[in-house]
Length: 329
Ligand SMILES: [Zn+2]
Image (cartoon, rainbow, N blue to C red; front, top):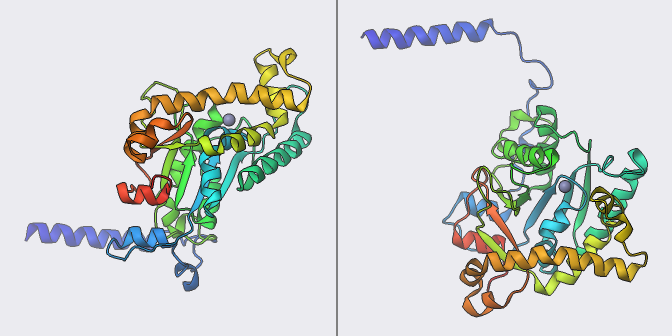
């Protein structure tokens, strides 16, 4: 009886508090039209929500690769992006920042225009879409305002899979881009956190791009993809980032005098520098490649990209992982 009274008292108190609260301000008090709730759920996500649904043989995946800067997506996932595109899936490469500061000689609007054009050209090589968010280069922060930009991006694109940086990384823009993606996981399904953009009815899968940082925990790959067949495309895409590959990055490590002047020499220079990481990735993930592709094919790849599942997105089982990365059969 005493417990019942206590519960009743709590209820009355809660009701009193509710009636004493000020009215909810606009735009959060606006009713969301029913049609927005009833938006079409992508086939794979629907399947994830209802495991009993029969397997659909043909489906088009939607993949969002979110890097902090123009060139991050191409460097870390250019190969797998080209493979998805070649199979008819939709891949959008996103640079969270506008690239306005990463240069020693130019900046601002002039640099943003160059970086935007370079990112578009690189995405075209890979058969992907390109998007540069107008967030300030070097000033990313895990704020509510920036989270809303990410929520809008993810809700409108309706991805099956999102790739992004890990949360511990040398560059603050990488760190906070990762944080913002993590903070958007689940919240993309909560309508009132951004009432102006229809919420997703599912939580997308999120996977991290690879890196070599050891603290607090090293990269632990769940998927490795052989990219030998598209390696040239990947290098061609990175080569399109002229202001980064042949101006800013060499200047930043005091190698600007080593940059070849001609196009062919530059492309070869980029190949030599970039291919090492993909070769090391294949070696480091040899057992995983064999597990996914079978012993024979897995042993043959010379170049690979690897990805680690994030705990906050939907966690695919082995079969769903093969649907998201349809390269192993
Ligand atoms: Zn970057």
